[in-house]
Length: 64
Image (cartoon, rainbow, N blue to C red):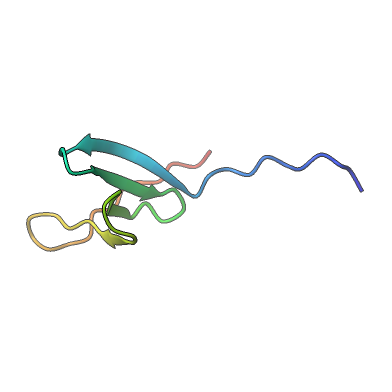
């Protein structure tokens, strides 16, 4: 067995980040499903990001 660990692609990536003075707000993308989530440094947890029609925002995933 090799001592080298295989480099695994990150499942979640920060797509955008904005500082609002009281903490940062982030849009986090699940690279497997394309679902966008809203998270912050203020409170733990994330929630799905919705568009103006109330639908979950999903990015198109391209094959690598």
